[in-house]
Amino acid sequence: MSSDGSSTSSIIFQGVKRSIPLDKPRLRAFVARLTAEVSAGQPFTVLIANDKELQRLNLAFLQHDYPTDVLSFPGESELGEMAISADRALEQALSLGHDVSTEVEVLILHGLLHLLGHDHEGDRGAMRRLETKWRKSLGLPAGLIERTKQK
Image: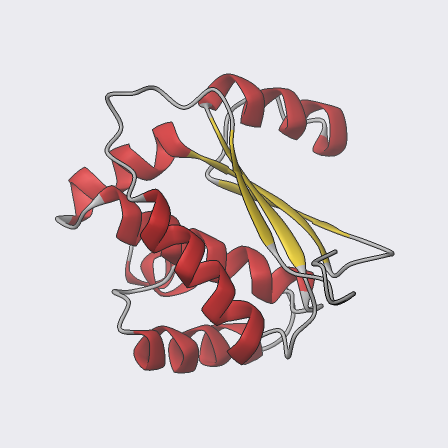
């Protein structure tokens, strides 16, 4: 909670290699913008960690024993939490030709849409359309759902 009693979203960096060039002030500002524009003021938490931590979380919660790029965990007192692998983000950014902070922004947007209750697995493209709308508004490159459709 902030000093005026309102809740704010937060971003936590844990175990990220120093060699991964994340623009932390930019990412904090992006989370604040998403809170204001996308989640209508509902706070959420973003954990940016390494592959090892994402693999641990993926195994613990989804029984998948491998690292992944983003996981979302809906919450009770706040919108929820998401975890993002800085290692996956760097690899994806390099393969797609943009910087790692841009890739983390793409992942945060995707995770936030899941926290808001969207699920691209069976929604007949509704989450993809919403992700595309926000991605364009925020000046981001192709989102996760669009990328999988292009393969």
